[in-house]
Image (cartoon, rainbow, N blue to C red; front, side, top):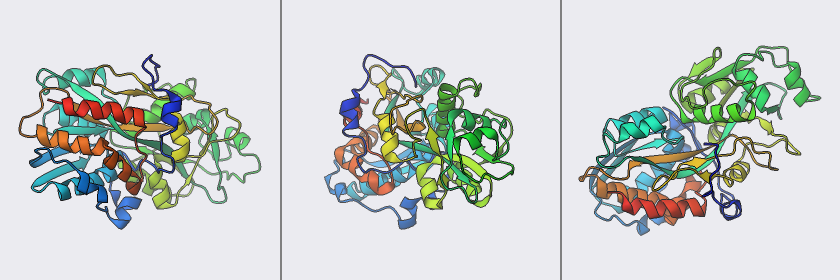
Length: 380
């Protein structure tokens, strides 16, 4: 997701529209979303539900995958089912890898993933998508936070190299000279770092790996395409909620998860020294500055995006992800196709995108959303 293409999105067009005041991605993996802000108050049915076009939707629609979008899905499903009587949509947040597996086995109508399909996954999808293939349709984006718990240290700064070395078990003490250099004046303890990573296959893990492989290539030699944790050492926890809970409970800990998990659990987050004039905090607005430079690398009806993980733009937070819906461009099951199209038409519509802030997400940039809106009605 790092290569630029001629059909790249104009940063100016995107930047003007990406989340002015929107929030963040919630989580990825097999998560218990009870920890997240959206769940604390329960999903609210939006007034936008009255504008939903059901367009022949009926029966049950099964979907699964990344719970980076789980809270948004809960809200979308509630609104859609309220507007379309007799429709039941069941989305399981089992992780990006699990969702793609179910999709390619024909068990679900669409899958959620925090990374675009690999070539081999596209090839496998052709067995299910008769006469077609699985395509990537982006829906929301946001930052991956590096959260930590370290008494007396409220504004920790790290760069890509130190993050890579910490998660690769090469920096093991909080007062390591590399960390101390980035945090002059901070009272760093001579204690062991407890690094937590995902135990399940995760697009969040993959996006972190892509960032480290790009911005700290000399220090992170692992496969950037892997959804499974590739490094040795550290401690594993299931889902973003599991990693967040582990960090919250353990002094001297560090882990990675979507920003809303840090917010919900009151976990401090790392600011990234990207080489810009000042370290960049994890926020939706700062992540949006990085997402604004995204390029479309997919062709035809595929809207896979390439992100610039090595950005040094002022205020641009580099560890970001975009979450996709994976669906067949052709060869969808006749009994679920009307519901699939109606639901995705709603989620990418202006009404569907506007309610994302209620669930702590960032709406799609207008140019990306327009492209997806043109594709969904062509699914067959």
